[in-house]
Length: 110
Length: 113
Image (cartoon, rainbow over all chains, first blue to last red; front, side):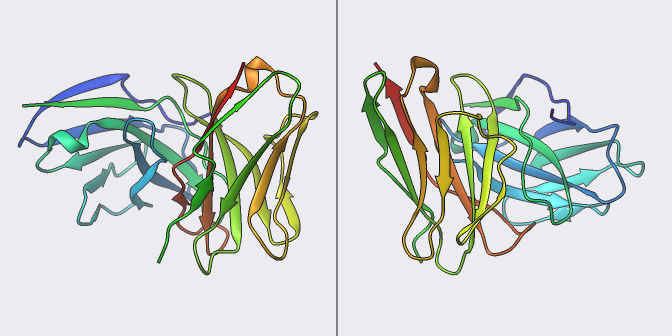
C-alpha cells in the first residue's frame, strides 16, 4: 500500500503557483520522496525527488518539512499544460519499485 | 535518444486469446519494470526484470501472466487466455540501475472484448 496521503483534487489559476501537499508520516530515514505526474493517459513523468533538503529543478520545487512527515510540490507558474494527476511516492533508496497512490488531480484553469 | 518504446499502443483481444505487449528500454538501460493501471486507479507494480532475469515478480498475478527480458530484443509481457478484467493500460519503465531514475513509456491499452 502507498505510504502517502494526498488531496484528491485541486484547482489553480494559470500563472499562479500550485502547491500540492503530501503527508508521509511513516516515512523511514532511508526513504526518499518522489513526485511524478501523469498527463491524461500518458506514461508517468518524473518531476523531482528529495531526501531531507529542499530541492529545485527546472520543473518544480520540493519542500520537505524538518521532521520529514510531509512535503509540498510547488509549480511556480502553473500553465494549462500542467493539468495532470500528481503522485507523491516514498521510495527506499535503491529499491526496485514505485508504489503509487491515487494522487492529486490538478486542474489549471485560464 | 529514443525514449522507452512500447507497442502496440492499442491492442484488442477476444476473451481467451493471448496478448503480447512489447517494451524496448532506453538505450543503455538494462532494468525494465512493468506496471498496470486499471481505469481511474493509480499504477500497480507488476514485475521487475534485468537481462535474462526476473528480479521481483511480487505484483504479477499467479496465473496467465508472464514476463521476460531476453538478452537480445525487447521485454515481453504475455497474458494468456485474457479475460475482461485484464483490460487496462500497461506501462513499461526502464532505468540504468536499481534505484535509478525511471523513464516510462506511453503504455499499451489492452481491451478485452
